[in-house]
Length: 113
Image (cartoon, rainbow, N blue to C red; front, side):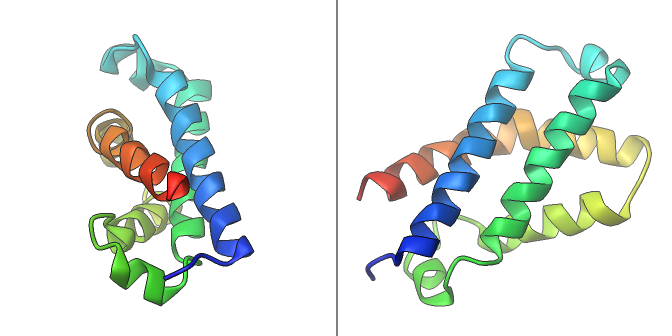
């Protein structure tokens, strides 16, 4: 399925947000992340953006590319928007450091096609 221009822009926005997050957390340990509100809020904002934009990718394209867990990205946005406290901090950290690197690789691949 060929991407229309808006879908390509959406994927590009997701990729750029993922790159920002990778830069934000590079070399950072959880303890520092937990204490640094500015860093946490920056990562949360970019994850929120990724989740929101993921929900606007056309369903046909999402079905063709199940290797990207579109629903999980959207669910993370909802979680961040509606939850608070330590649970969010830990989940945001895990998303940024464990899940997102693989998502970034997939987004790079999709944009190069």
